[in-house]
Length: 379
Ligand SMILES: NC(=O)c1ccc[n+]([C@@H]2O[C@H](COP(=O)([O-])OP(=O)(O)OC[C@H]3O[C@@H](n4cnc5c(N)ncnc54)[C@H](O)[C@@H]3O)[C@@H](O)[C@H]2O)c1
Image (cartoon, rainbow, N blue to C red; front, side, top):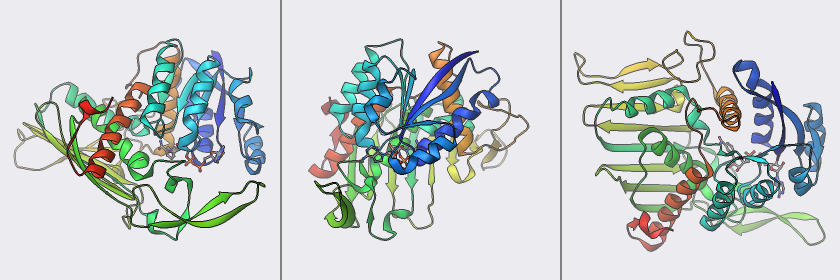
């Protein structure tokens, strides 16, 4: 089997999770055409020892890690603001690129990344909208593609977490210059999920956003290299609510917040069609709820999706999947794409992630200008 040397950029939560996923890819998927192998990891100094223990050669120089001849595939697990320069450097060095979401922190950056990637058709450009790898979501997509329920009338989705109100610490996720706020962090997943399952994106949006915690203690690095905590204004959204129109005449709504106590990683959607409905909750991740009015009585059918009819069924017989499995399935899809094989379920390309950015920009403008915004306005 061909080996593909992989470099991971960033060794925080996602970098470490991905290290495990590459180690498992060919173990789970015997038909995986390529063996990903550990090359280097770009790390901050305090992460070097941990990376080494897991078999990744630490590299403290970001650009060297990208351009270094030791790898052919760059996996970007950095804070959002660093995706743009890292991806462009990787594409220039003719490497496959897998990037975390959101693709970038501005539409201009996202467009530049997309155009650069599309100018190199032999290279992978893939974005980690990971919930595409949930078997239940793949099954939902299949049902819609088979036109099992007719026209989509109304959609509802949400992605809520609980930690935005805890203390006053300013992680990079609250810093507008480093990350994009709750809509970019969480809402982006659900914007992509709507497209993945239904093939439709909003045509017009109307939104309101809020920043509940107005100031946070951010870590500020001084010119002499020292750093200190400073109370600074927060310029990103804590919560966003959107209503939108769909190209088929249907309507929908999206909510996301990091200030929902008890919602540890609570996300899901309800899709109401002319002749039935589907509903998915991350809290019950392996099941798709299906409503078929043809059945006797009214009510939902709870379909266990870790079986042969749904994608990514490693073990068969309903053995449950979790986040680690989804990450492994994503690495498997990336290897298939590099080999030119058809996907089990489509990966999110840079183009797909750019479209998510367009929708996010429309949402932000709608809030700022208190009006409906057509996606035609967002170039
Ligand atoms: N798809 C998903 O399910 C999912 C989940 C979590 C995070 N993410 C995305 O993954 C990316 C990383 O998130 P995370 O949770 O791993 O963050 P993190 O803070 O845990 O890790 C980020 C890592 O990037 C590096 N880094 C941090 N600051 C840096 C700087 N100033 N300069 C250079 N390198 C720096 C460090 O190695 C750090 O550990 C983000 O884009 C985030 O949105 C995606």
